[in-house]
Image (tube, rainbow, N blue to C red; front, side, top):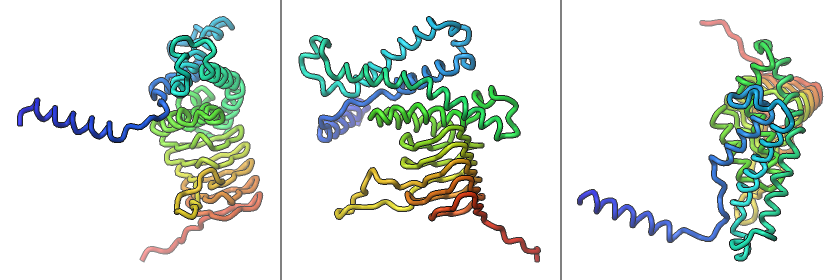
Length: 296
């Protein structure tokens, strides 16, 4: 069989498979465009740290110009994901297109949250600087700490999620996961002054609730203990499955905390490599004591 026949055969098989499985579905956002929007938001929040922007954001006009570009990028990206709902006449004239109006409204809502996101991130950076003796300055935290980048992406993705833009939010969170090794679901709720030290292997589940001034180390899992199922054996979605971490808690490396009813009380300290499936009272300490024996 020559190369041409092989290519025709494979093309036939792939196209037949596609035609058999293809169904009308929502349009999907382009992943590269989602990450481009994320990068633009990073530039707007911290222009002094990123090449190509420093020196360009010296007045409100510069900010206004970049915000305008971001607004229309967001509008186009959101609209491309819901365009299948547009009426046929929208293809002739976009005037009166309800989906376009919805896209513009959500794009503006995200932009309106940028000052609050910046406020929270500044507190996160300060918490990292104060909480890590190895940090020389806040510049180092913002430019080099994977935990800070992961929480930046999460705080942006969480706003997308709140607006029902779940897939875009998940693309952002998985991008951060691939870059940092830190897996934070965009549905998780995280309070101010949050610090992830080192970070590799951290997992924070969808329904996790984290209070203020919480510090966690590498390898920590805030996960689900079990998945409730319906009568047909299908997982019931939307229930609280992940723990609640109250204010001023420290969780050391390798700790695993599971369950939607599990609450780690304010000021508690969770030691390394512990396994927790029930609540811990405020200001308690949980430790995994090693066995020290003399070598034979």
